[in-house]
Length: 138
Picture 1 (cartoon, one colour):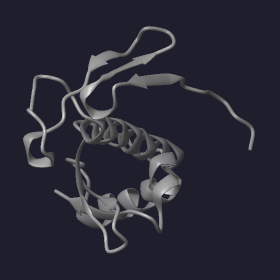
Picture 2 (cartoon, one colour):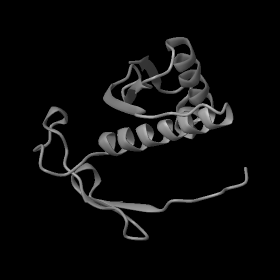
Picture 3 (tube, one colour):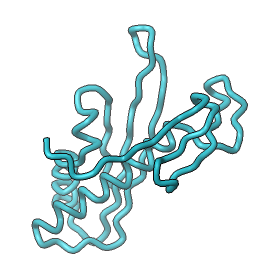
Picture 4 (tube, one colour):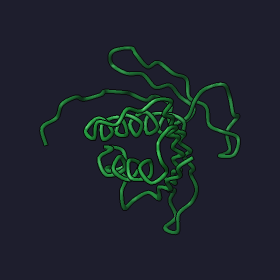
């Protein structure tokens, strides 16, 4: 693969620690949610970071496939929910739900764009077959 961009981040202290990027663009305190046994402090957590990254990446994939088809998108939104829970092998797994809003497009056309975006989105490709992803068109 021809790498076009690399991101570099470091975490110290696990889920109740701190995460930074080498360029200083990201510098965040992490807090373990109460539902996972933590204090639920003011910091973010890996699932929120993944949800934000996936939502942004998926929306850009939508923009990309729409541009290829000369479709103008306005008011597009992607809401991502990332869940974590125990799997049947004694570890933990993730589940994702992406709710996509594509106003002004016929439903059939919008659904086709969502499916095409799911095929090209790097996040979707990275987790395909490993993480359950539900796609919902609003």
